[in-house]
Image 1 (cartoon, helix red, strand yellow):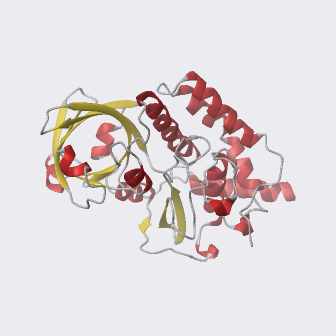
Image 2 (cartoon, one colour; image 1 turned 90 degrees about the vertical axis):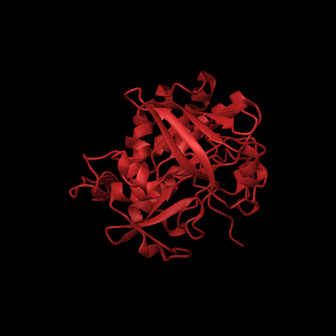
Length: 341
């Protein structure tokens, strides 16, 4: 009887996280988005022409600035877009010496004229260390964290790894770095048939889809991510699907899987390093995770294959990431919970 209950729970998790979309997306099978145009191979080279000093010298700058964004699409055609860019983010924006994260804003009219959907923005994740190869590897590991979660559920952000040529309009100099483009949240909502939520701070646990919340919490536990919170809405997007609140996690650079050198641990978690795991889902769920664990166990081979197949990460880092993921599956000790006074 107990096994039947667990199997039923696994079925319900699978049904929800990989539900067959009976209702067609608004733009399904008709139009691509600007993100779709970029999302056709593992690494895409893009060009961003802008005034570096105007945009980056003041990290508190809230303004939107003119820029030119270009890339070659899957057909080899050059696409050139006049866009607006603005600084975004918190830690990487204020604490990192390199170019801060950006939001790329496209004009709706330009998208319409190009016969694309009106999902008109993308987030650009930038790196936070000076060594170019180390920076690329750290971004590749964070990119893989997103790709691993894509394997677990389609209720997740799609991402694109990019090689970016930043050309300064004043000096004419070009600086090449790497980054991650994240799809427009409006497109995510349309793709999974979810609705926007304005405020979900301290929302009661019963408002959420229990199985989906457990899967999110256990995924974050698996990758060693302690930089997220349901109650504070930190590094999660809260949406409504089928009348229940769900979480879409993002921003994984503080996770043990990435193991970035600039990680800052929250003292209340009492972690010795970013590699140490802690369960930050609802405490009431921590004692009832068997079905969620078995669901992730089913995904183990696909997760490992995702890491092995990635061409932008070094062999050494692949082995370390696989070792870390396997340590989650081999874990037999009690799950660590936050300290309670």
